[in-house]
Amino acid sequence: MGERKYYSMRTGKNPNPSGYDLNMLKRLFRDLFNGFMGKDYFQEAFGYWCVDADEVPGILGSDVEAQIFRRVRKENLWPIGDKCQEYSEDDLFDVIEFLYDYVSKPVDGYFHSFGGCRLGASLQHIVVRPNALKSLSKDRAGMFLSSPEMSTFERASTKDIFLSLPKRLNKAMA
Image (cartoon, rainbow, N blue to C red):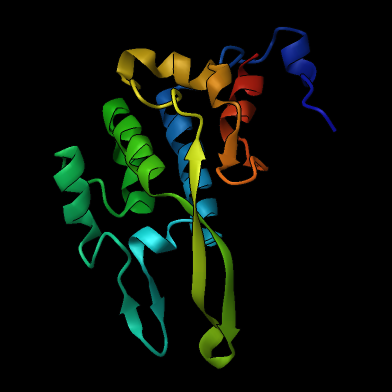
């Protein structure tokens, strides 16, 4: 079913016809981020916890907050799910760009029954169209939400579309 305008949008009575304020954008971002975390899209970067192996660090090592600081030069951005409601607009878009560099989709793995732990995920790096996030800044936030370049996230190897949040935001703003 395609996106459609609901009654208050069609009649011009919706209190938010032109989009989202920063607080709502942070809420939507947190929901999307938590969805990615739930699907292990950041397991390669952030690591995971296993009942057998305890904390297993990802490629960012055991201190992800330090690695975020090293790249973004800001403190108090980690853990993202807990801190994102406190982000400024600049913080939010810095974190989006940081996550862009480290998102990867698990392509296989195995399950062991003790404690419901998933181990051995093999990951394939996910890319976004090349020009979409290169020059993102506060004054280009509107571009981020409405750019056709941000309409899809794609798997690099097959170009199969697997997620389309910016497209949803774009349609919701129309």
